[in-house]
Every structure is written in C-alpha cells, then in structure tokens.
Image 1 (cartoon, one colour):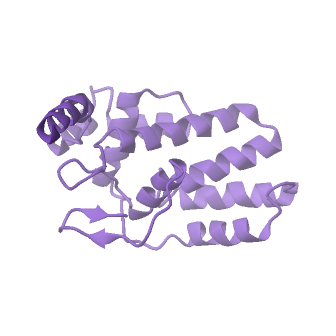
Image 2 (cartoon, rainbow, N blue to C red; image 1 turned 180 degrees about the vertical axis):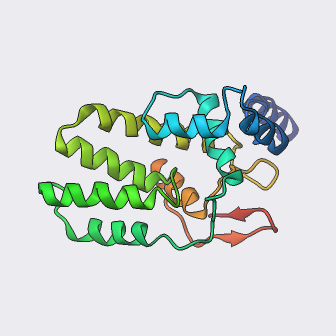
Length: 198
C-alpha cells in the first residue's frame, strides 16, 4: 500500500515538477544580450520601468536576467528599503496622509535602484498608489508584484534541494512565503547554493 501511495504521489507531482521553469543560465544570458531578442535586457527593463504589461516569459527573463546586470549586488545594503520598513512602522496604514504616501513612493523608487523586483517594495507601491487614487499605477505595480512572485513560484516546488525555488535576492524568499500566508523560522543552509526555510 505504501508503494502504491508513493507511485500515486510521484505520478501526481511529476507534471508539476516538469512544468517548473528552472532558470537556464546559458539561455537567459544568450537571450538578454541579443539585441534582436524580445528579451534583450535593456528593452525589457525599460518596459518594466514604464509599467508596460508583461507576460510570464518577460518576467522570467527580466527577473533572472537581472543577475547579469551591472547593478546587481545581492549583498549590498539597501538603506532605502530599511527606511521604508521604518516608515511602515510609524504611519497609520488604515488612513495614511498624502505626505506619507509621497514619502513611501519616493523611498520605494530609491529602493528599486538596488532591488527593482523586491516584492515588499512593489507591494508598498500598490498600497501607496491605491490610497492616492491612481488606479492605473496601482494595477501596474500589482501586475509586477504578481509577475515576480509567480516567476519565483514557477521555478521549482520549493520542497527540497532537488527542485528549489530560485531567487536572486535573499529577502525575496521571505516575501514569497509571506505572500503565500506561510510563517517561517530561521533559514538553514543546506548547501553552497541552497537555503531551507522551515
């Protein structure tokens, strides 16, 4: 019976694993540096920054392609992000005033210079523009937020070292878990390239 259960579970999980869009570094690099490619990085990033609607493939090459961008520094401090967290702790999130919303937007824009795909930053831009009544920007940043989160989720099942979810910044893992309503404990290093968050 246990063997049958294992076979059934494996059969059910195989389609999910095979559908995973694991980042292929050679493919990503080849496409983001090819000026004739629809994923040429400068054009793709410009479309992202001008809040154009992107598809799943665009987000895949945009998110993972950032690792080849000269501004990619996963260990660099992000003082604007720290300031954003401090601001979030001090404002009335139920009734934010205009000055607070403007400060959040300005701080988020500075934070995105270091980490343009940070889910917390994108979420706060959704919040700020929504409270300002700017529905177009609220919806655009909401699409970006979901595009980034879905890109990470689709990169693996996250249940083990064999099929991890791939991130480009450590904080994105915590943001992803929060978006899924999962609580977490301190991360454990599994290997040189894999971290486990219970």
